[in-house]
Image (cartoon, rainbow, N blue to C red; front, side, top):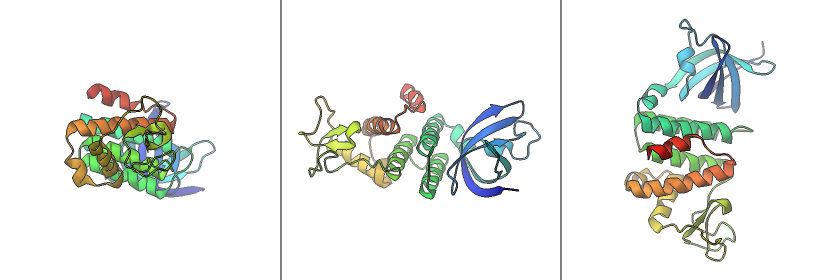
Length: 242
């Protein structure tokens, strides 16, 4: 039988028929996979609870004609319950997996898989503010996808920084000559926070006041959505909560 086994993160699920689900996963070696999990909605299912969003599993797949079929799933990281128990973690996690689904739609790398697992693990453990974990993930996944933002030199002409204009459409900070009229200014503290989020400097991030973190988060959201060419639906819930 044409089968393969891989580690995977469950991104989302949708009902299929009376007892099945279509599961979208990001795998370590095979990229983004859509597969049918048969019978997982029945109470007698052996691995239904393992194929919920935010779970990390070791899964075996049968290669189907249109969709693969999940034959087995063993839990590697049960992050779903801890994330779902806290609204901030839950909304941040939804934004993260929605972004992962979009970013890895065409192709993926093991680095993208490990980045996603690390973000979900951090959320489940409450290691940092959920908003900060989400923003750090967004910046890093953009960088891995070839859309690394510039926070020092001008993103358009390369003029040495620092610069105080941020334009998502141009790729980050830009100099006065390249900045379109009405471009928002960004303070030095917010800029250093963005750098810390991208580099994973959690000592700096954890010390940031909520207002500064919120301002940086708005810039990250604008940058990510522009380059993804799609609005992240989960951001709507985040904005309402704020």
